[in-house]
Image (tube, rainbow, N blue to C red; front, side, top):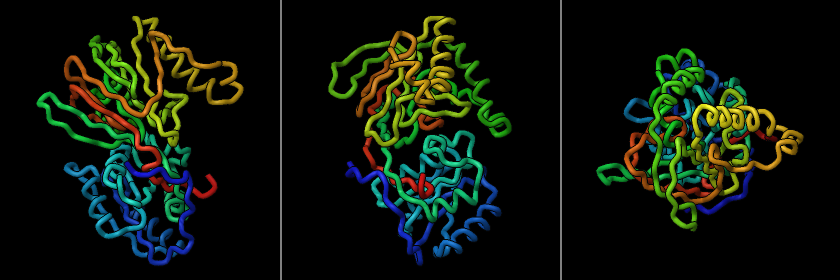
Amino acid sequence: MPARMPPYDVAMTNSTSRTAAVIYNPTKVDLELLRSTVDSEAGAAGWAETLWFETSAEDAGQGATTRALERNVDLVIAAGGDGTVRAVVEAVRGHDVAVALLPSGTGNLLARNLSMTLDDMPGSIRAALTGVDRNIDLGMIRIERVDKTRDEHAFVVMAGLGLDAKMIVNTDEKLKAKAGWAAYVKALATSLRDPEELHFRFRLDDGEPKRTTAHTVILGNCGSLPANILLMPEAVLDDGMFDLMMTRPGGLLGWIRVWIKVAWTNGVVRRTAAGRALAGTHKNDRDLHYETGTEFIARLSKPHEIELDGDSFGKAIAFKAWMEPGALRVRVPAGS
């Protein structure tokens, strides 16, 4: 496991001969505008000529990032959606290279949780080349399939099963391209009609094994979503832990209670110090349950869909998830 580093590291001010690589999703960016902006900002900051690597349907970004790292680049810039960011981070894991974000997708979840500007391309590129490095935690998960094979992946935002993963599977990609985050509303309505629950055994850290039933299980490294939804109000990107959320609402009233807690209490009230004092500490109940930990092992009674950072990853029969504290360096604007 990578050693935990100090939370902030000032980027080198003498950037002459330093090289950045842009890993870009051609379906998410205006390549001509992106190239001209990067060339302009890199020249102004004194960086060497930028290297460019395109993702594809066969390579979400891991292969492109690996080729960039083989060129000994000093910075990797992820220009795409949450899936591109996740793939880039997965390939960078274990390398002493910072990752910069150029928000270009629907959710831009990591950038959103880092309080970065989402719609300023020149500003994002300038921050990538002249900003500071912040060390954040990296989530890892080993998924076991029905045929007993296992595959391992990184995640920076959330890993989820149940309603959360079903919503991703049911999302119309064409509608998502046109309507953005609103496409998930239709997918959520479809998913809510599925009564199937998760039945599983689990162990959190060194606790006793337990059995439970839930509609949704989410492990979150951070908790803010679009539409002012704060799914996990206590989640922190650099505390060395994930936040575990499990829901099992009892009927329509239960779903209404969950929505009020997530959309109103978490999304509005708890965003201010006064609101947090008014709301008090969260009390777990049957509808909505939170815990924190560093390792979570689960075995399901039957295969269920699983999602990582908003992308479907097929069906899992079991999995082990853990946190690697401070394992990822992310470039953020100076002074942030």
